[in-house]
Image (cartoon, rainbow, N blue to C red; front, side):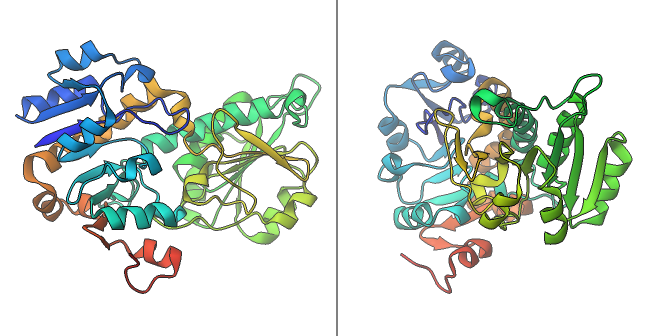
Length: 366
């Protein structure tokens, strides 16, 4: 199979779809790999690294799309890429269709095979291709939250870890999944007081077992959320519904109950956000303020640490990319139930129910 690795063109996205080590494995399996010139530079991988691994370097993104049977990316295609996508071409990347009707309709129109990293699901019900980026984003959420709590950027002026004689800051984490647990771990490491909410008692029991005593759990419901937002300095949104739009756990009216300078980091922004006032931002312009509450909702948080993120992503995507290249998408998805769940749109048809539900569609909308 001919595999293409284009350069990411989303704002401040420095990750790349595959490392030279991944390219080496594809070439070893007798596949041809085209890499767009300078595609990996943001992650610390250069043209000569890919050439030494066996890739052929192409000058433009248009050439990569035109000459490849499968495109391996990081982020969803943006508008400038839509017309480059060919009918029947495999696109293997993060899509998060439920948060963008425009993207969904564009991929239906292009009649591509859209296999979404975020809905590949293993036998245990976990999402192996989403997990490493959720780990990165959960840890980064605390780094960014701590920064935006500083007064020069309109935060409360709170040091999360506190100092002797001064109580530490308080962090509220919505969701005890991968993002939530990583965020809680980082916040606890800084010395903050952490409250983590979830509706899954099994998850809360796990948190209680593995976290230090200054990480406490409560059951997630509107009453508890309204109570806790009044006293917490940093709120992390880490709720995920597989392939579906995130629920709004914090509504616009709740902002008025928070103290001025409270910071919200909504990691669920890719799926529409779990805060009603969330809108996607970029690393270039990461925050906005509503009712004196600082919102940080960068849609590609791991893109700020591209070396770590690209390495972590290729570690988990490469085995699936090899299956797709070795067998073709139909046979690969037939033999691998996890990969089959990654199928979102196939040649103009939405095949993932949660996408249909997100837009209230009963049949395919062209």
